[in-house]
Image 1 (tube, one colour):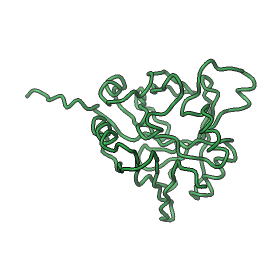
Image 2 (cartoon, one colour):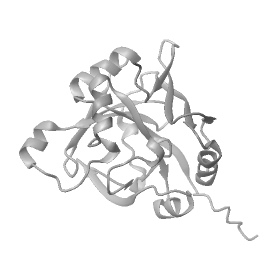
Image 3 (cartoon, rainbow, N blue to C red):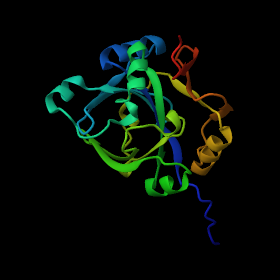
Image 4 (spheres, rainbow, N blue to C red):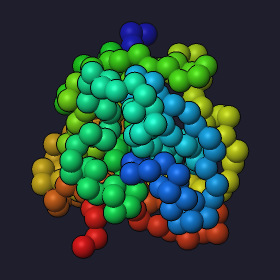
Length: 230
């Protein structure tokens, strides 16, 4: 029987959600207090002069807290490019100075070239990244921006499936839903459909807003938005 090409990536699952921090230590402490969970050590990304810490969610999903590594930046100087996840953007820095904020989400695919061709938007340049003994391919816009303010995901491909979530301890925190608000929800929904993500994603009409709904180990449901409360 001939296989029908649906045009969607063969695998498309939520890999991780990204929270930006002004300072990694204080930002992680803020998130740990909110979620009543302890983050695990991550590492340094030399090509971006950033560092992170990780929290396992359900299955192979994890939460990444990331910040500019100011010590590394002072040592290495100009890295010759804009950092990923909009961390060099003035508006992002102003928001993160108030508190850690959701920045974006990342979808794992088994063919990152196919995913970027089929998704219906510019997800960025496919870039090889390494950290310690990990290696992966990630889509990164040259200007460090986020697709539709982080509402549309970046793509990641893990060679041999070596996702760091499998090394992290379970803690009972789970991702319940990702809510995407956009003035043109039909466009966002069409891109999500092209990607073929089966996890709970809710698209609504509204001004750009990214919301992660997380349930703590005690059962408390938290809705964490990238809109800074005034």
